Length: 306
Length: 265
Image 1 (cartoon, each protein chain N blue to C red):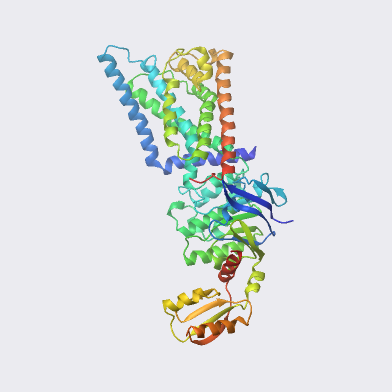
Image 2 (tube, rainbow over the protein chains, first blue to last red; image 1 turned 45 degrees about the vertical axis):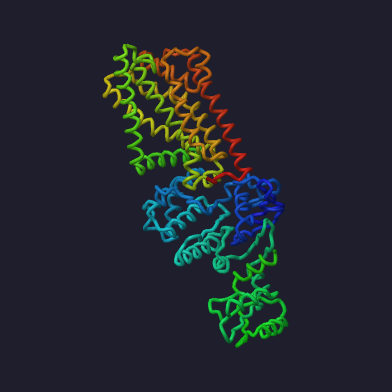
């Protein structure tokens, strides 16, 4: 049985179709990323799964049950909102959000302490949330999604606005949630390093449709070895950059103006590119194959969708 | 049953914590209720004497005014706790979390409003005793009987709070309307006991309970002398408003979910 099954989901706002007949599933115990540019339908999909939005069409199942009756199977953290009461302490917040779901007593008290200790918040459990750092607040919010021991945890932009150190901590927390606590995690993010470091599967949405749905490794393999770095003899002027942009290849300009990267789908295209660069009097010093990162994979998927 | 117990427990805890942690707000609320009363009371007394009219246009007696003001305070708190609960949580970014509970958004709002009311009642009684001490108009305060009537009747006000809370889910910025409604509540207490036609006491929210409370506080009566009809009136009035409020709130919640408005503010 899949943890999340979404079948033929359709949702529109007036004339704008936010999600257009999408279907996907998420394996139990996996970390799955749902990605896409702004307005691609990620939040609509997530809110539909959480039963905060009623779609026009489609079926959503959580652990095999209709999502409208399986609300005790899921908890979530939403982007752009605090998700917590800032005048309560982390422990009080966890107790409150467990209480409004009908859980309490010593078991919850113990669990709240365990979670806060696990997320290195043991020293801060009685400090008012408003006085905690942004990273700590985010960790408390994630702990809050775990207090009721739901099978599925949805995290919408869990690293948004966090510093590097906090992002590293959140990555560890996410790995713990899936690997040690055996939860299914569906996360939406624009942070591709997070996806590359923690996710098992990826769903890419664009304009309300799924443009890719596979394991992270398969998607990385699909584009592996296809990025080439051209080290140039001279720095590129703005005019030369303009010329390159007009060619049929997608050139990525790096911080040094003397290096450009390009994704190709056939090795022979290197010769074409070399010819074209020479024709434009852009002299090449070296051509290197580059390890691809997920950010590039994502951009390719989105561009293919276009 | 245990689930409801935990919901009530955390709601009570949060109500108390809110009062303590937002102390400036709590103190200014109490002071404003007290100062507004004193201003109105002495204003009425002064102009009433000067113009040789009974200063009881707002109530049958000055005692009536004290009792009326006390009831309005309770109604105002019950109404605003319910109606503003939605907008407050939307502002705080916690509405989605509450909406995801399988206990149901309306149940959480109702329990929270009742626990807030219980905590606020303590404040209201404290303000009432301060007012009586200041004005030297002492009412017949049988706290136990008053609380019974308030609890029986207050569900009508919760119903009204739910209606406007539901509208806030859809229309968001309805503060002006929410504010206006609280002043309409004055209409319910503005006249003293038995001044309304019997039919109006059946129809107006909380009016039947208000009449009962006037009978105890001003008339020195006891709830034990109330007829079955008197009590039924309070319960039916309360139940009808509450059920209608609940229905409208749930419909609004459904519309907000369909339009994708839940949580956005």
